[in-house]
Structure formats: structure tokens, C-alpha cells
Image (cartoon, rainbow, N blue to C red; front, side, top):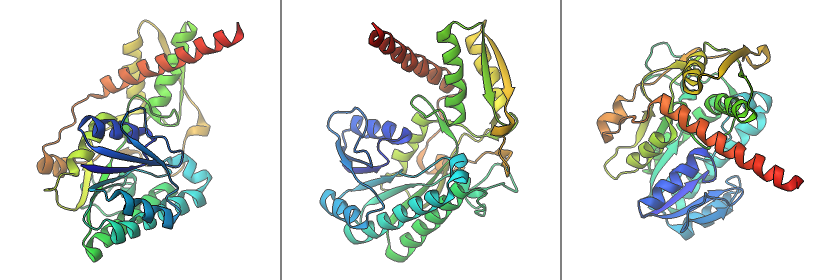
Length: 323
């Protein structure tokens, strides 16, 4: 199967490219850097989705049967710092890809990675796909607009677009600007330094989020690309939410007897914070048979181990450079 992945060098994109290669797909991975993971047999293409003509040329050349659109500026906090770039980049990329699909690959099955952030502060939990979109930050606005535009193009032009709305996902390889990766990196640094305790700094420790392991999310994306899946929105979620404080408690158990000291930094406490966010995965489960298989405890343990390996290699390289 000919597969095109945008955002192929990103966190979920890297895992998705690997899963597609393992399944025997012919993969073209698109990113601004031209990197698409470490897998052999992947065609890596450097492409800026903001350049409409280049996007259209690539789709005409690849003739993809399946397109996974994961590329986006994806951090809530940074979207407050630079809302202009978040909105312009994400929306222009969306328009250009939809136009290229309409002209060059109208028969392709498209999995459009939206976000749970499009729902905003929900009136009722767990959130279903029927909930109104009420984005509460610039990133969420950009994703909600792109989500709705993808739905409009699907209806108006007969495109087969499945809009995946993943809730928070985490796992090995994620940047430390995200909570699970931040917590595990801070503890990994303390363990590698031989410190008597790990000092872990967070924002509001009571905010609750619905976490799914990135490997389960990627599995959901691939299931949603199957020919029999009807277009429309699908939540990817565990149906449960957990606070930052609860994550730290799990990590403290994993690294005992190392003491974990939790410090709340007021500068990291966001205004307009959604305090609890969890989704119903019922539609996805009923349609595809998907179930979240990797518990949060395992995700935390694997991400911690990944950080220890990464930081350990960096430390070894630094020592060699000083010799």
C-alpha cells in the first residue's frame, strides 16, 4: 500500500512510519527537515506544507492510497506565546493539503489528526464526538478550524477523510515540553547524577488529562485507515483521566527508594486551563475493535528508561569529547 505521512519526523509520526514499514507499506515520509525516522525503505521528503505548488506536485507524484496528516505546530503553551505562527502555519498547511488531495488524490483514504483540544472545557464527561467544538487556546482554534475544514472538503468533494481526535498521548521519544516526558526526564537526570532525591517541577498538579500510549495511538490511526471505516470524527482515548500529581506518585513508586520532591512553579500554571479532559473511545472501539492496551504505568516506565538511555549516551559522548 502506498502511504504518505506528513509530520513524519515528529513524535507520533516517527512511530507511525515504523508501524507502516513493519506492515510492508511503501512509505513516503514528509517533514520540513526531510527526516522520517530510522527505518530503511522509507522515502524521506523535505517539504513545507505551506508551499501549495510543492504539496500538489508531491501528491501527484506519489499517488498515495492512504494519507496520514500529522504535521502541525502542536504545543498549547507555545501557541499562547506565538499565536500568529500557530494559526497561520496549521491552517495554511491544512488548506494546501486539502486542495492537493482534491486535485491529485481524490480517492485516497485520509486519516486527519485533529486533537481533543478542539472540545475545550466540556460540559459533560467523557466527551463524545457529538460534543460541540469550543477551543480554549490558539492551538485548539487552529486545530478546530482545520478539523471543520476537512469535514467540509469531505462533504463537498467526496473525499474520504477520517478525523481522528487523539487525547493526550505519551511515550518514548516525546519532547520534554509535554508533561509525561518532562516528568520522566527530570527524574532520569536525578538518577543519572546520583542525587539523593529527584526534584520534579510542574505547573498545576491537579489538572487531569486522558493519556494513551503513542503506540496505541498509532495502532488506532492505522485501523482508521481501513477501507470500511466511515468518514467523520473518532476520539482516540482511554476514557480515564489522571492528574500530574498522580503521575508523580506512580513515578515515585517506580524509582523507590529514590525520594521524589514535587515543586509547583507558579510561572507554569496556565490561565484558562481546562481542569479535566477525558474522552469516550466507544465509537472507535465499536468501529475498529481497537482497545487501549498499554497502561499509563508502563508508558511512564518506558519513557523513563528511554530518557535514561538518551541522557546516558549524551553524557558518555561529552566525556569522550573532553578526553
